[in-house]
Image (cartoon, rainbow, N blue to C red):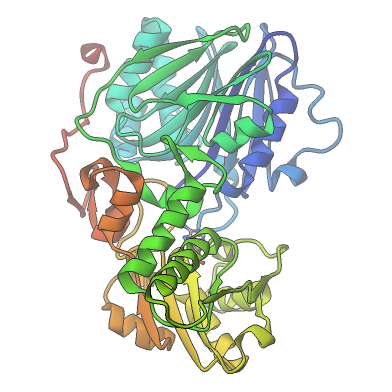
Length: 484
Ligand code: AMP
């Protein structure tokens, strides 16, 4: 199960958390469109509303009112390639001997089966295949024997992989980020409380200020009265494994992730793309929306270079591809045929910007190659003389096990092709990708602090059948009492 989601948790002084949770989920909608939900706690009991669909579809007038309580968590869930999946809508909630637990998860564990088998052996009954339920059961079990912080630490020592969680134990809301910080999670401050969210854009939406990112391996416990938070650094890893693809594609450009404004990173990467593989062209155009910030950096660098060399009049930056904003992300189309149709529905060239001209299109990434193949063809049909393709990420050669639904190896166009072969396949006049070094440079991190699994085929976690790029300690089979 590859879950690429958005999570939020809120504790307020004297108002219900449901409405701000609802607004934050709107702000995080790009992180998941399959299902959404809110679970609150009013000091006595949990209230929950979890439904399939977009936030706008899942909540109707009146649905927020019964969600009493000034503490709560929320979730938006990404569609898997298998389509609609009722089993895994979140937040997941359970009641057990020492109270209630709600859990919202972004990421993907790599040792789900081992932990699930062990818990099943102890009598835990599971209702889904998902890893979130495994985390909830493990935590519930630990909470029977230990205080909150020790229980979370025990669970963190048993589960391995990628997780940014918002958790609610009775009315206490917490945020937990895996020791390698694979998925983002930040802390925000509101006038009357605190918020934990996958992206800072959700905090902005609530007119809050960003306090900082949750640190890898850290547990942040919000005061249920909305007056502050406590921090516990529970697990330390030698290196981090931040997902670079969050900065390339997934996160909103207006979010600050691990201290970097996503928009600026993308512009910087666009500039590097020009420096590494700039080509003379009449017009540079982004593939909306994901290529926009890259293309503006690319065109800016191209024009600076031209000014320095005093050549030609500069390159034109044009929005030559119009996007139909009502078509969802192409990935929810299960067949190749439907995916091709979706690209055509989604994007339409403006003939006058391309006719008789040399065009460079900039996109953030190529996955299956559907978008670029279709666009090159469309632009040629619209009269472009030449179509050059520049991509703001390295070739995606391997699947993501850490939570991005990225297609399987067989579907990835770059898995077994050289760049020249891909260029021929998509029928572009030229094709260049960005280097891994440029990405590490723009993020100000060494490659060993990033998860680059999808572009190197080597992962920062121990995944069966795959290579790892670092020392990994095997997580399975530890008795839960021995690791706190
Ligand atoms: P493809 O058409 O399969 O080559 O996919 C590339 C397009 O999908 C690009 O325009 C990207 O912006 C977008 N994209 C990249 N990664 C993902 C993802 N994990 N889910 C949905 N869309 C993506």
